[in-house]
Image 1 (cartoon, rainbow, N blue to C red):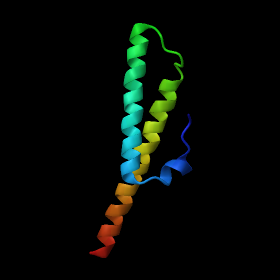
Image 2: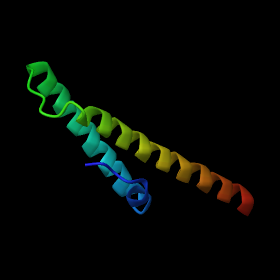
Image 3: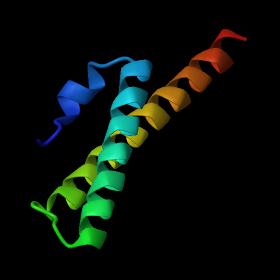
Image 4: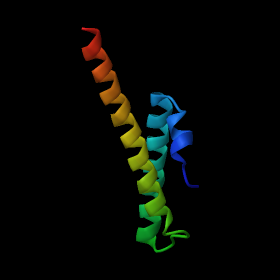
Length: 74
């Protein structure tokens, strides 16, 4: 499941944080499967890590945007 930037940008911060936590949990479970030697889709690691990076980037952009907005209002 590839996550599109456009879809992620439409989500609220809370929804993004929940998605990030879900992806991290999935990575944890995949790591456990890897230790046991039974990972079905090893490429999923890369996709999950990229999705997490996209989410963190969007959250950081929003944080910077809010900080700029607050500075202008003062």
